[in-house]
Length: 425
Image (cartoon, rainbow, N blue to C red):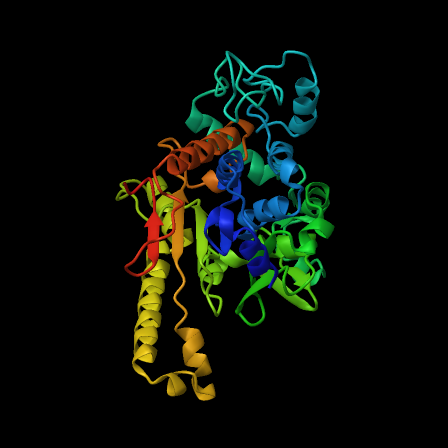
């Protein structure tokens, strides 16, 4: 398979057959994943397999479908293009005014603009030198962070997001005769054009970086992965992975309709770690919803906590199952070693010999930590300033992770498995 071949070609550098980047779904929080990738890029840790669901699939597609030296720039371009600066939430023509203001020299953060892309105030911006940064005015100058969150969420609900989705002209409860593709509150047609702008699908399908996008077959309820080693991927495969109902419509692929993979499972980790045979793997899993959290004491916090639990990755369950699987493989290997050579190499034991393969696996888990002012609507608060803050959080977390001694080292002895999470200590 392409992912395995690419991984083995760089084994001497990384120490693993495969370096996988695993990206969870989470809407507007997804810029955290882009920040993580920027930090990986800076450190020279490059994936040969990217797997994602929903917004994670979009980020994965941009990474796999961009030349190496353009990946961070294209991620920047995508996120800047779909987000709005604060201050336009209640204006029907807010996008027009925002674009006009951004083009003016010296535009600043606040109710009527944001610092222009590439500007810096008092040194390097949150993405490094020459990157987007707030002006001397606070990036939340329009109001408190909480108030801006409300504005961004309201804006997303009423007007959609540029280059991403737009409200349908008539309520979806009215008969429209459009079938499954029209049964939603929003139309995601703009996203197809945006994806084709930022993703080179010819490059993605050449297989330099394996790409996998998770979705759910609406008719059968079965989970499916669109994988570049098996089929030719297009923008519609990415859109299918992010078609979260009832907001977004099901996407038709080869006569079947698909919804967002997060309806069933919001992480591709198990898919990445369960090929047969398994390869020595370094997996960087970037989650947007924490499984752990405080006990909520208000209805607002109850709704936020419900989302966190519903869309969290169940990483502990996956890794526990994986460790048990590795232990069984080791037991099989020891059992085979007790047999005489002729019996051990018998043709009818070929499958057992293959199952006795004992790879080493290193899982690095990064989880976005919600700010105390964020609400249950944080996944559709597409404010430019919040997006940049999420990006900065991802960049800071991966830098802190990679600064740890031996975090990328192959597991030695024991089960052949190790996991790292800076937020667990």
